[in-house]
Length: 321
Ligand SMILES: NC(=O)c1ccc[n+]([C@@H]2O[C@H](COP(=O)([O-])OP(=O)(O)OC[C@H]3O[C@@H](n4cnc5c(N)ncnc54)[C@H](OP(=O)(O)O)[C@@H]3O)[C@@H](O)[C@H]2O)c1
Image 1 (cartoon, helix red, strand yellow):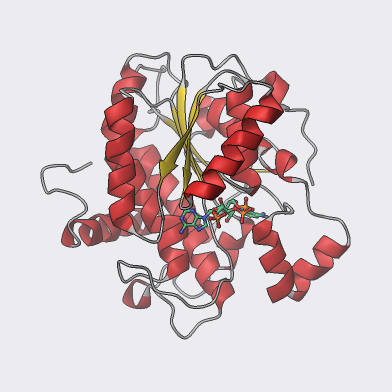
Image 2 (tube, rainbow, N blue to C red):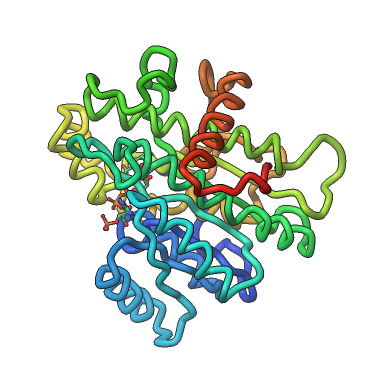
């Protein structure tokens, strides 16, 4: 349940800042774009469909009562990693700074599907494409952070409490597609990967012990709660628990569901020592256990993904974080 006093109104003025939100055309992502833009930020809305993005941008501008609000469509289909590279290049041809990256796009319990790149759809949509996007944008995020006060520049990755329901070793490196498992198991594994990714980013670029310094990037994984979106509709059709919770009216509306992302991405009340952590509704530090705290697993997943992206030719060997 949502219980914090945090609201979009309590965000600071974001004029002059630039954000990217993946999956910004619907649900929590749409409301995240709205929250950031309502405070004056320029926002790049990543979507796989130009018509959905255009419709969303038109409706966001109406809601903002600002027909020229700087919300821009950035084409990116998480199921095709070449579009992640292209989206990065398009973004970098237009902007030299990036204050916040919100890795939000996701699917849940969709039928078995393989991406253009040969990965299972939950794994690629929810995790892999976001790993690649953040990796490619990190040099720009880091240079932005060097020119800002500590804490301004952040990376937020949407996870789900479902990460706790991952099975076996958490991440099944020997059968990452989980071909013999249920769709929900694939979702849980991908959402655990989101938490582990943020943990490893924290080690690489997050705040260190001691005083805040320019260049540090604050990062967080966020569970938005049960939110009534296209995703939870899927949850309701594929799970008795989901159906029951939604029937009981336990799902929050998307604007409330976006509060956790907005808090972690831009609130002055997000604390430095929460960086790297797992946030739960709303605007609170969550509790982690088992795989999420396994430093070897965090590192192993990073290395596995980096090797895959190099092998597929999406990362050049000259960049290593
Ligand atoms: N809703 C919840 O209760 C809940 C709970 C826990 C975690 N979450 C997390 O919150 C995030 C947002 O979910 P939501 O509830 O807002 O779901 P949603 O309303 O279904 O929105 C998902 C967004 O991701 C986009 N997307 C899906 N596949 C894509 C692809 N291949 N390429 C580009 N974009 C793609 C969708 O675009 P299209 O419109 O083109 O499909 C849409 O914009 C997800 O990461 C989800 O795991 C949600």
